[in-house]
Amino acid sequence: MDATPAIELRGLARRYGERWALDDVTVDVPAGATLVVFGPNGAGKSTLLRVLATLLRPHAGEAQVLGSRLPERAWEVRGRVGLLAHEALLYRDLSARENLRFHARLHRVAQARVEELLERMQLAGRADDPVRTLSKGLLQRVAVCRAVLHDPPLLLLDEPRANLDPAAAALIEPLVGRASGRTRVVTSHDPAGGLAEADFALGLRDGRVALSAPADQVDHATVEELYR
Image (cartoon, rainbow, N blue to C red):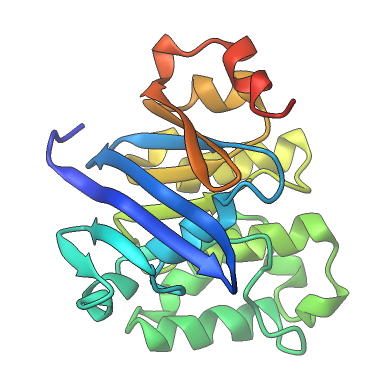
């Protein structure tokens, strides 16, 4: 882990209309570290990922990602981030292979990388089916391929194991798990699993920071309190 921060947030805020989805969020994530983000539905977890991915502009505070200030230098960040959101971010009428080839062209990635990922995710047999015909589990595997296609140094993962059985979860682990060696921000509703794979923990409630500490200093009961 590099002590240099990959993410620096100071008083970050983002609102939807009159409602503050994020309010005064301050956190640092060193390069190569994993930050797990806990909180009930509507706490601001997904909004935080979307701000870090440059899909949403902050309304207040300061944000620096991979050495670039947001939103002023968002263009420097976009090609260096892999986002795995609740939505697959795929074209439903295109096949898995067509979707990945499209993203490969956007990121100037060799087409061989597409085939490599399809094989690794055991998707080759369904690679030419429209993604709208795939199960949620298969769709999640394609979305993982899209997120890591361009070998980004930062992964933003919204419950990455959602809809995956244990065998499929093991398949994605080398690509988006701690073993990937990338800086990661991972949302989770699982206190035990989330803390086990993280270096730092952030807890949000109503958009505000309710917990911020090294993961090994947080117990399950403290995380569970966020949901009460």
